[in-house]
Length: 286
Image (cartoon, rainbow, N blue to C red; front, side, top):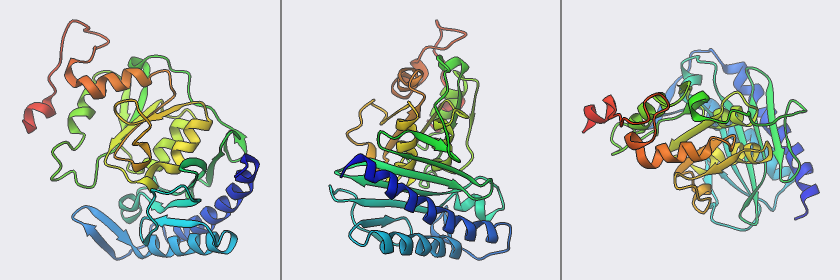
């Protein structure tokens, strides 16, 4: 597929995301019933209704495209065919509690590679959009990753997996290691929106284990087109699409982030380079 066609595809994705976002905005702050797909993985009627809106838009415009949605399931993402990876409401827990950090995320892949993506924040009416070799924008204005060149000066975001109660590694130790080596870390509960914030320079980096393809497909396209870097914890992109390990940055601090992810307490400390810190979390969960 020619790259210029991705722009037209992106426009449909923006329309679909904003239509779903209108429903989310209307429902936000209302009392609702919350069900759970696991002990800490909530789902509401708004999730499923928003996904239905998106799928209707996509099926109408692109009946030949495959769709993988968080709520409805669908085609396996291991394909070279055109496929959509959609999360109709990334930040369901936030939505259910009236915490205003959430988004709609639509990522499009072609030939097994990211080709277009839109992340829409309906509460702030912010549309982050990008397509392959076409740049990235926020509400039509070009965006670029930050110019922070050192981890010690970086403002980061992170997430914890839904299996955090039972996972052997739930990111608590890594959080401590990054807190000691950066300006700060925020955990706001919407990976797709956090990654979009890296693309526009609000965050300098983000990492999370155990994501899903629909969590980061759109955001990855945004960051790549905004001049940043996306990889797994080893620095490779071979397993990236699965979402099993995701580290996103402005590119300049990427290697330092990888060093922390690989070496944990043994990674260099900006104030005490001669010391290795053993985290409180590591002691607590040892």
